[in-house]
Image 1 (cartoon, rainbow, N blue to C red):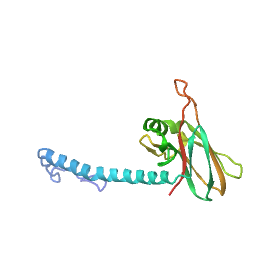
Image 2: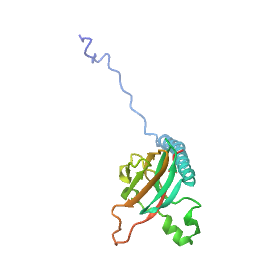
Image 3: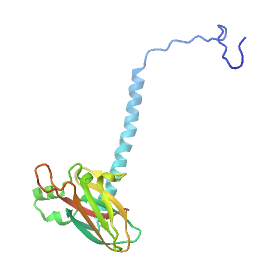
Length: 184
C-alpha cells in the first residue's frame, strides 16, 4: 500500500500514453515566420527611433572640434552632456570637397575606445572620460561614437581629447571629428 509521500505506480493507476503524431513542420515554420514578421519590424523601429534621437542631438551640438584638440562652451547647470566622435551636420566640414569631407567625418571602429577626454568645468576640477569605460556606448555606422557623458556645472567648460596611442600602425597621427551635445 502506498504512502502519501510516494506516488502510486500500480498497473491500475498507470495511464497508457498515446503515441504522438508526426511532426507538423508546416505549423513550426508558420510559427517561426510569424515571430519573425512581428519581432523584426519592432527591432528595426526601436533602432530607428534611437538613431533619430542621436541625429537630432547631433544637430544641436554645443561645440565641435577635432581630436586631438578640444572644445570650449558655456555649460548649463545640471544638464547632461555627451562627448562624441562625430561631425555636426551643417558644420565646418560641409565646405570641404566630398572626398575630404568623407575622410574628415569618418569615425573608424574602435576609435572611441582609444579616446581619452578631460572635462574641465569652471571650478578647476577634471573629469576623465575614457571610451572603453562606458557602460552604454552609442555607435551609429561610421558617423558617430560616444566617448562618455558628464553633468554640466555653470560657466565655461573645456573638453580636451587625445587618442591613446596617438598614431596608427603606419605612424600617422590619428584624428577624428569631436562634438559635445546635450542629452534630450
